Image (cartoon, rainbow, N blue to C red):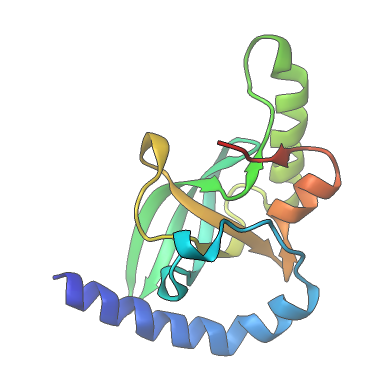
Length: 152
């Protein structure tokens, strides 16, 4: 089963890279990545995704296109950023971050995502960089002070 998923991921990666990466690389900003010894070269995958809902400024639920008419709904944590929380004193800033993200991709918006590792992090969420129309939304949130760099 795992070999089939790896083969599916690799074929999907080749297709998406051929179609989207050249334009993404031209216009996308960068998000600070963890040290290379923490991320192996093969631990990055690109997928098409439909955003089903924006949970908060750094978490979305998306329907991910795995290829061959195979889809999976996952909660994704935006990699490398930490947006204000949606509760207590941070609520106004958290709502601002969430509304900005909704205004960019909407709910039902088509995006491309790059997962950092195909395994879950804390709270069972996959880590992802979200691209919309060739723009790295993770980086834009940092640039606009809607989020800060994530630190453990």
